[in-house]
Length: 425
Image (tube, rainbow, N blue to C red; front, side, top):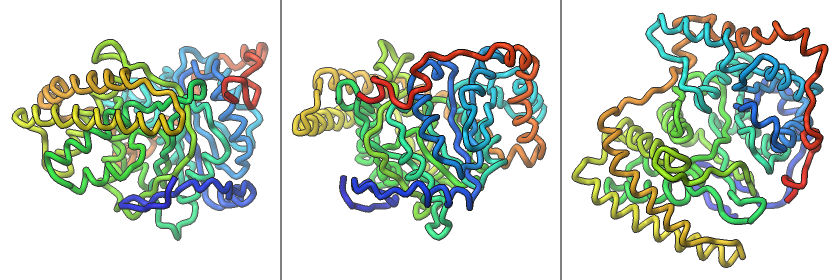
């Protein structure tokens, strides 16, 4: 924790607990605010989502909660609706891959736009924004697997946007990724790939404004962010693992740095990805797609790209910086008495470095990525599309509503508890 500021305004957590739930609810009531949670049906069998739900019950001033849900059947969606019953604000469970939604999105193909996938978080976020932006002036997004979620998360994320005198349009979270079970550092894609990659690119191209911008974020891969709806409506949404960095690129394109803030959420834990045994798996796949996104945004904003001749330099620089970071995180862990497997960290850097050469080749072959179009563009083509999508996301399960009323879904006992032994670890 520190008090330093830079290009991006940083809202620190000074550990004083200066939160006011009553005042925050009043602020929410004065500005229509929605929360969006992209979600897989699997999350309903894990404790994290119950923890999130119970914490959100305190936000009586919230305009709505949108659950962008990927599910197999209408009964699954009905079960999700039951799970969120009793909230002090409307909850809209939007079935992202439901038949009616598919029909609506297929109709957009007549406009020459491909919006039917690929399925994943980016696609869910894009649909959820279409639904949420029609109901709110501010939208905040949280993942469904946050095991440390508390009432401070939405308060700290949303307050910079609720008071227009701050002039903020976009808020990005940052935090300390630690495992609840082992207390070991997590976030390898950020610590050991993105950080060293950006530092290496800066050595090759110099302190370009866009590189300085990306490096100003304490946690550029954080999946928690919030924005005003006028900004959200104008963002193209990446549909791969480059979502978070791709959104930062879109924000850079539309918003002055003085209107961006990053907020410290403190200790944070959610599901951890494995490194993977090959480039198409786990963190290796994520890092490969992030690399292409960084190259693409660097070309878009600065007209620069790593050439084949520069690739050996990038590989050598990345390995050196990555190994330096391993040493630094080792010392950080040692003084804080955190477990640290230096050998595994070195192997991760080695695996990430092997992605650069094929990643550059892939980018050169296909420099244009698939991005889901902004909602402002879609509205210019079809002003009814947002409304049609929202209605389609709720229409399919009406067929099974009678069966749902006769037999309400049952949940494991731990789902209704605010904390379990796992989340309290």
